[in-house]
Length: 304
Image (cartoon, rainbow, N blue to C red; front, side, top):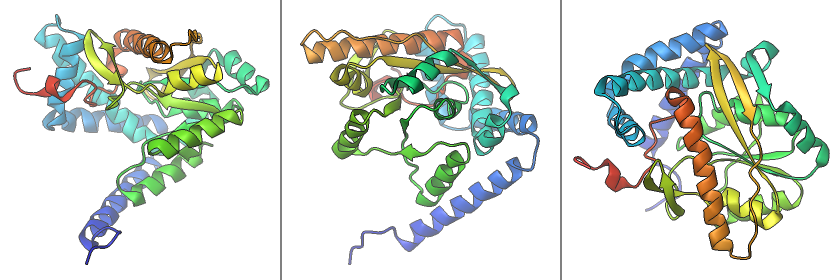
C-alpha cells in the first residue's frame, strides 16, 4: 500500500546524513573562524578533484576559457575547489562572521540605505560568487524588507538545520515552488517587499540567451518582476579578500524599459543579467561555483 511519506530506509538515510551534518557543524563552531575556512579549503581541495563533478567543472571552464592552456585549466580547477571548500565550511559559522564588522566590507552600502528608507521594492540579483550566503545577510542587516529565496535541501532534516543556521544571522527564507510560489512572491512584491534571486543557474523552460557564447536557459523571474512593478534590478556580488574576510558590492542598478512587448523586454533583461554574471566571473573566476551544469545537457556529453 502506497504512502505519502518516505520509506523507513530513506528516513534512516536522511537521519544519518543529518547526524553527520551536526557533527561537522559542531566541529566548525569550536574552531577559530579563519581555521574553519582553511580547513574547508584543504578538505575539498583534496577531495573535489576525485569526484565525478570534477568533469563538469572542467567542461564549464573550457566553455568560458576555450583558449586556455591545460595548465591554466588545472590551476583554476584547484582554486575553485578550494574556494568551494571554504564556502561549505564557513556556512555554519556565518553568524560569527557577520558579528565581526571587520570581516565584511560593503561597497555601495548607501544604495541599500536608500532602498530601506524609500519603502519601494527592488529586485536583487546575484550569482554563486565566493561565500554568496553573506549577500542576503547584508541585505537584511541594512533594514531592507526582502523575500530571500532558496532551493530547499532534499533532506528535510538537513533543510531544517540550514534554515536554523541562517536564522542565526537574521535571514528568514522562502522556498518558492511552481506557480503558487511565483504568485506568493508577486504578492510580497506588491506589499513593498523586495525579492532576492540567484540568477546564474540553468532554468529549464527559461529564456534561451547566450552565456559565454553558448545558449543557456535562464530564469526570467527578475526581469518579469522588474517590468511588472517598474522596479530596478539591483545586482550584488561577493568577493573574498583573504581567508574569511569579504567585500560585498551593491552594483549600479539595471533599469529595464517597458516597450509593451513583454517577451522582448524580458529577453533584454535576461541578456543584461547574463552580461553582468559574465563580467563577475571573468574578473574572479576562481570564486564562481563551477559545479553547476549551467548549459544544456548536450554540452556535457562525452566528445561535446
